[in-house]
Length: 174
Image (cartoon, rainbow, N blue to C red):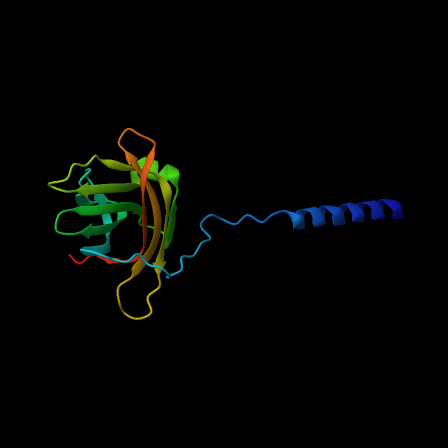
């Protein structure tokens, strides 16, 4: 009986040791975003805002009433406008999009220029992380997003450009 107890005890110790040595894998939603190196607006006008309970209706990113939180990053100058929209869920205080979400159309890209010879680019890969920033005072909530979006020409999978956005987004004023 003593031998059976010793063998069982040794087996449990070995099992515990092996289990403790396994690499711990956290949830993909266990992330933070530091507020360092935010995207600057080097030329023109930049706007980083979001709208609650909205949806985009077309390639031009027109907004309508919906069930999502739409983040819009817009940069415009004298001759062109670049806009990225990110369709996030309304629930939760953070979200994470990967390649599959981007291919599913949750991220859209639009470049418009009246006098440019330009071909349409579409998002094909990347990662978008968003986290709600807690309010310290009575100001409205804001979100911090960190996005790396790979763009390709329509009907192509060959990357031609990458957009990096790391910025605070404020609730749009209606």
